[in-house]
Image 1 (cartoon, rainbow, N blue to C red):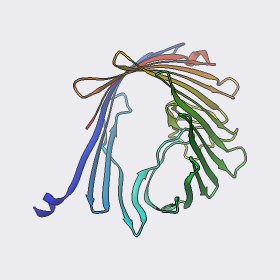
Image 2: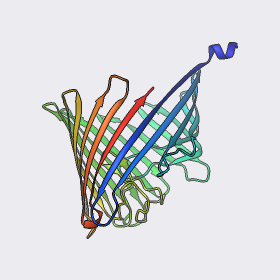
Image 3: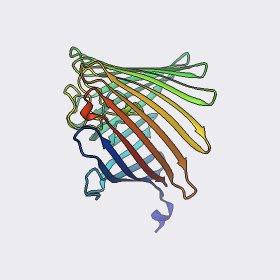
Image 4: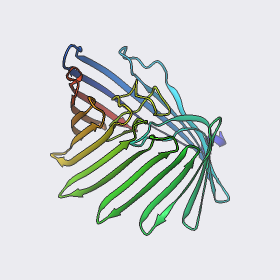
Length: 311
């Protein structure tokens, strides 16, 4: 009883349900789908040491049932003599260039010396990496050495405008990727623009506001996509513009996404997004999307209605 009473344990989570109607051109049948996604996080803490477990379940099938509620992340984090340690299983997060991956048997160790942070990452049956990061005259810089190349990140804010650049450079010919993003607020309108480029031997497979191109069929991103939210081919580039503002208690956003640089595969996606916090503690979001593809048979427009809650 004493240990339970003194335990520092927190439980948090989120859930969302979606209804999506897709109106397809050509001979492709229209569709109506209900889906749900649930997440649960349990965190325990004792002194400088914490244990985190994340569970998640998502319905991706037409049956409308979640077959499993998986343990996605499970890790221990602590600090010993100024060195931060994290050991276990976790997701490395999304960016605009590559899909996220989750792996067990991972170790991350980091320390900061004179404003410079050194991070060492390793995992079972994979190559280790070393990252150095810091701030120089208001510019955040990082360089990550990987077996097959390097990751370079630069970001800063100038007169209220944030500018960032990320490059994943690889030793194999024609497999470099990079993304440039600029954002700011002007007269009550939040503006973002980003441009992501891929060499002819590699595929963009990120999942950000620019679009969900996360590729579940390949892990090296050097093959054309087979299974993803929106399939890209090797060498295709993506540019995106977002305009967001508040209107009558709603957040209203317009996004224009352009996919190009492969003959016959150019695509334009326009999205209109309305988000509103409801009195019952949930958040309602409506997304209307229009996809105009070079292949007329693949054009479609869709309406997605989402009800989400966090606790």
